[in-house]
Length: 136
Image (cartoon, rainbow, N blue to C red; front, side, top):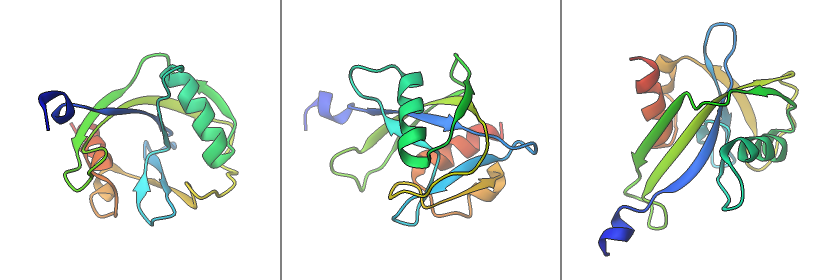
């Protein structure tokens, strides 16, 4: 690999949906891994458009608001991935009307977790990185 490939990141936008205890909403994907609601950022869209599109496609939830400024920026290395070993996530606080979601292939279940609970879940590495930042 050349240096460009070694440093290449795929960017995704993440929706941080909190409950009244400041626990974060995670989605169980069809591979039984918990993740933050998210979507790959397409070339023509900004992160806020991406979050709106993905929340509708994956969860069918109605967004009330999205903060204009990201709350977290996370980078993580997934050495087991041959196609996307480096990931970068732009995380925005999102409020939804309710939690009456419709399951999809990309989101079969939702639940709120504290940062301490996250370390005991089957997640991908970026969720663990977020929980560490939330505890700082």
